[in-house]
Image (cartoon, rainbow, N blue to C red; front, side, top):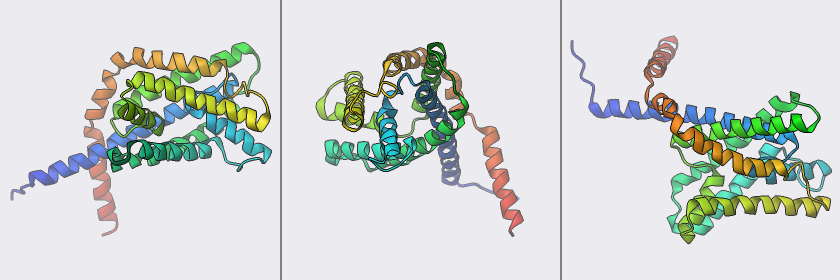
Length: 255
């Protein structure tokens, strides 16, 4: 007996599997990114740009002058505000699919808290140790960004606001990215003065400047060498068999 499979059914299955595989790899890239961010925070030389505001606000929370949220939870709040700003800037040009940034931003914050816990064992003193931690964090963050870009899902809210500024003003993306990064750093510094009366150098310091330069340069260096990840994105035979096999097992187990 020959069973005919409707082409549209096959396409739908492939699309579903492709979607889950794509976002499984995205989850991996976000974990790598947040691990890099955590290492930068642990260096005490200055965190990466995207975490400066959540970092300083988590410290404010420790004093009781603001809600006592973790750095990851303040990341949720900041990402929510960044998406809201995109809506205000783009208005009707804001595509509803970009609301998925809220989910990505939530996962990023959640993984950041996990990695802050995992990196809590990385303790040490001295400028050499701090520098090594900062450079390791920048390298790992750059690898995660390179993978995240190639996953092809919606952007992170931090990148989304840059895209919105570019669309609204016509400023090239590279220049808009610099403006957004500087704005985030300035806000973090200002919050340090408002709540602590001084610059929080371990939040925004030389490490932050290193991250701004080193991460971008490393991403550009890695980009031509990421073909292996492109192949991984499009090659999923084992994953497909695993999904179908798991579905069959569950069906037979409960029927």
